[in-house]
Amino acid sequence: MDVTFDALRDAVVAHRPALLVTLIDGPGTGDKLLLVEAEPPAGQLADPGLHRVVLRDAEASLAAGATSVRRYGEQGQANEDTVTVFFEAYAPPPRLVIFGAVDFTAALVRVAKVLGYRVTVCDAREVFATRARFPLADEVVVSWPHRYLAEVGSSLGPRDAVCVLTHDVKFDVPAIQAALATEVGYLGAMGSRRTTEQRAARLRAEGVSDEQLKRIMAPIGLDLGARTPEETAVAICAEIIARRTGRTAPSLRDRAGPIHPG
Amino acid sequence: MRELMKDLDRWRRQGKRIVVARVVDIEGSGPREPGAAMAVSEDGEVVGSVSGGCVESAVVSEALEILANGERHVVSFGYSDDDAFAVGLTCGGTVHLFLEPLDW
Image (cartoon, rainbow over all chains, first blue to last red; front, side, top):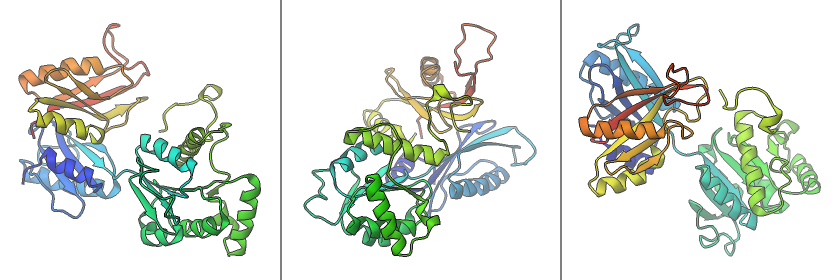
């Protein structure tokens, strides 16, 4: 089966991990392979030796979600560089799960969509968790947060984020406990310093360790002086980025060193 | 190419010929990561970007040339160019792009 743009588009639109291999220099420039998770690979490179080696590296790149350029000999020799191959990973977009269907949620959905997140809004209250209030959300779920996380929590990873905006102990203590049981990369909880302290005490009483409490970014967001829901959404998303890149987020002007993370 | 999918689909439905430029490698400082892409249609419409705006117009000329001759190839833009008027990245890095017709 030949590699087609349509097959790539279908995989990307369906959020399925995919890897497009393109021979970008050397004999056969333009030849392609397409790997989509849980499907047989499509495409064939002219030289069987090269095909075998590139397919092996493509499978590893798909598993790692890694984009790279590699060089081979015309028959796939490792120590030669007559053929250049581009491995382009299409990882599904990172996920943001927001618990609590409040005004701040609508703004956070909008900012997170700009950043390319697939956004879920989850709230147990049917009146608030509606599509009409969050038209940009990919998913609006009426459920208790901990029940929702029991279903999808195992699919959350280091690139994903959970924001707890309910600031109601009844909802956010079980939500945070459930989120702590996942491998989600960012976990933030909204609330004043007072609420944060009370919540921490409740979580400790539920058996959450100090080590686990350190994972929670609360009060949520960078110290930007944000007031409005929109400004707060920027402060939250900026914190998500900074936690992922491991930066402390001062102004660039006041720092030395490279602008782009290595 | 992810962020271009909708536009590429639309152009293809309209029967337009298209060239896609993808960042395949960067050396040193570069504003866009490998995988960033832009596309040029036969009537000179542009979507996406491959740098902070430094090399896009040069990519459009290259792309229109490829529409004429069909030759897919790698194009590199760097800072350390001897020609002061050459196109390059102001941030000091080198970006390698692969340009090809969307004929697959």
